Structures are given as structure tokens and as C-alpha cells.
Length: 110
Image (cartoon, rainbow, N blue to C red):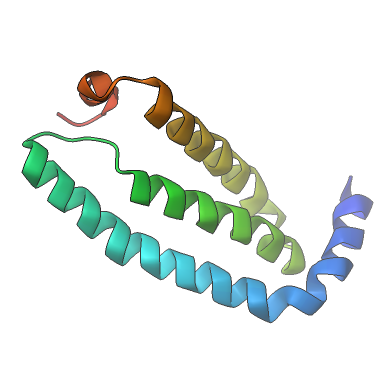
């Protein structure tokens, strides 16, 4: 398994700067636009809800950070990022299959 990731690391090396910039860009977008949108949405709804912007930005961060972590050989980040991708995909799917009125039931903070 380690040999597989080492070979993958060599292939991603030429994209290291682009992946690093993508991680930085999406991280900043997540913390500025995403959280601000969630706060505004909570204010309008007078309740906590799931923001699609935060979910999609988080998905983008995790998806760019996995290959970036491979180029940096930061193996310990990959499992957490993989879990983040799965959770983000679940939230995106949930956005479309759960009726809007019951979205508030899925929040952790009331």
C-alpha cells in the first residue's frame, strides 16, 4: 500500500503548486464565504440548517487536499480527508432527498 502511495506521490509532484493553491483557495472560501452564508441562513430561518455552500466548499477542500497530502507524503491526513469527502457527499445527497421542512431535524445544534 505504501508503494502505491509513493508512486502516486511521484505522479502528483508536478501538480504540487497548483494543488497547494487550490487547498489554500478553497480553505479561505470555506472559512469566509461558507461560514458567513451559514450565519446569514441561520439568521433568516431563525434556526440552524445545512448550507449547501459550506457542504460543497468542504467537499472541494477535501478532494483537493487528498492529492496534495499525497504529494507532501502526509499520509495521516488522508483518512480524515476521505471521511470528510464521504460526509460531504452524504450531506449533498441528503440535501436533495430530505424535504426542506425536515432539514432542521438533521442539525446538531438547536
